Length: 309
Image 1: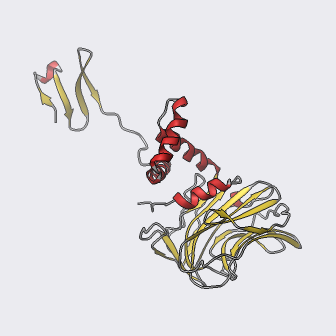
Image 2 (image 1 turned 30 degrees about the vertical axis):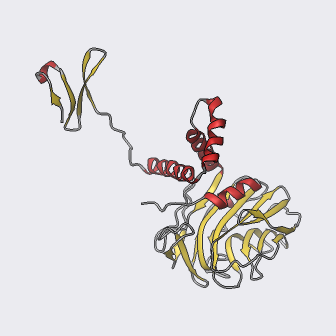
Image 3 (image 1 turned 60 degrees about the vertical axis):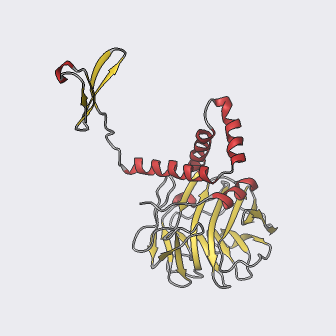
């Protein structure tokens, strides 16, 4: 409410009336002006952009004092703060994201793509559970038989480009867990799998042939959260477990054959299931570039995603 210090018609007053009109003094002048409003303050695009900034702030809050000091040192030549530099870097990485499925959304809701491309997936018979960061409703509970997500996402129909796939997994038994796929064996596309041994496996497919890269046998992986990842750079694939390179067997990877009719699936091999995950699934990310070993270590250590309201 405005505090009247003189007759209002003289404009010698300060404050706001009804949230619409503000009276103030500026350089010996008495000013009355309306309060501006944004025409699309809650549009889908605005809300998505706010999500990106919020996730960048979440990331900043996880950094140590030494890491923040390093960012401040790097930011000084640009006359910005360390936080501003981190947000800039975070949003730049967002542009390299082809898809990001935090796996917060249970059936019958669509599985939201948090990347800028919004290629949402259908969710089949999932329930939500506690994620790796202790957040309720933050991960998908998968029954090993009938639960999966699927949808048309042409951006991850990779052929000649470099790419990276990352997923948080919590397997509960020894079996083949199809983490994410877009293709058919000896036909087209690619597969990203956790085998029963257990080891991590990425295959690229062409008609009548395929190439596969395998990790070393992993330590105890069941009934706990782990980050598994694959980066393809040229003809070479490297596999990561909890941010560490565990590759032992390289094939020379040819370009996957592209099939526009294939769908992307999470937690199964194709629509209808097959070798579904039994356990939990959290963040699944697809980058259109080869992440460095340091970036894999950082993502494993830092990333927590807050469910959208």
